[in-house]
Image (tube, rainbow, N blue to C red):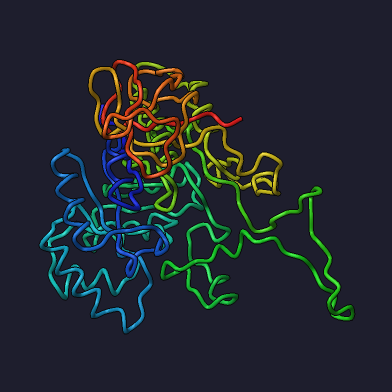
Amino acid sequence: MNKPELLAPAGSLEKLKIALHYGADAVYVGLSEFSLRAKADNFTLNELELAFSYVKAAGKKVYVTINIFPHNYDLSLISEHIAFLNYLKPDAVIVSDLGVFDMLVNVIGSQLPVHISTQANITNYRTAMFWQRQGAKRLILSRELTIGEIKQIRDNVSIELECFVHGAICISYSGRCYISSFLTNRSANKGQCTNSCRWNYTLMEEKRPNEYFPVYENDRGTYVMSSKDLCMLGYLDKLFDAGVDSFKIEGRMKGINYIAGVVKTYREAIDSLSSNTTYNVKDEWLKELAMFSSRGFTTGMFLGRQEDKDFNHDEVNMYKKTHALIGIVCDVKHGKAQVLLRNNLKSGDRVEYLSNGYNSGFVNITSIEDLENNIVDCARNEKIVWISAHEGVKVNDIVRKKLL
């Protein structure tokens, strides 16, 4: 049984390592100039080379995004970038623009496999058939499709199909949005979105200038264009049966805590898919996903037309998280873990290691040692310290702390 690929975001080299550590089969990366996540950490050219070496050594795959909608002045830079990618040889390049596709396949004559981005708005099997004839290897389907429509596309093409299963979705679901351009002159279609749809808005009647009327659902207000986050954990078996080859997680701008927990959860869920047993969502998976900030969860349009409740109305629990990242394990020796801190840590704190294969429970921090073996009462973000660890803790495990 060939199970779907788990494709994770990698907004930086550190996040890439975490995604692979927790079970991603592949990662997608990009440079700010050519990516729809220009505000993510992203990669320099040197870091991209390091990332490729790391991924290949791990036996995994890496896809590179050139999914902006370029203007004329972008084309020469994209041409240079394609030449660089021909040298690096990623497993695929993700594109949305016909011109960029033409540059890759016909003008420059690259042999790199091409994946067609969700930005290309593939919503029917005729479009899918077109891209298959042009030589694309994979289609990243529009978020507007139902599972039934995906099955219809699968019945008409043999090309690989990919869809998003988790993460943020904007009011313009497949991403061709111009609100940010209108309001702030920063194009979402070139990776510079200001998330204008997430803002809180008021109304003003034209004969009552400067009198602003709030639009709200409760005493905290509402964000009328801000969707809940996508979560298809409960329907992975249905998507797999419909013929989806790759399950994609959104989040190149999200933190390490999010990457680790979400990838680990979906890894376990995908591994549980079987032709012999019924797929069941475990309570521990849902608890894990609830540990991170979110806007609440929706199944989007996969199950049919969205109900009003699937749009976020600034719920009380919005953005609340239960755990905070403390650090990343760099080394393990003699029952202790060397940790690069991403938050402050003090003696007496209770922390948890997130490891594949088991739940460690919480560890009481009775002592903290610096790199000179001095006992310290506390340590700050970016410091490297030694703390006690369970058996089985591994390098690149994350350490987190439950919030009060």
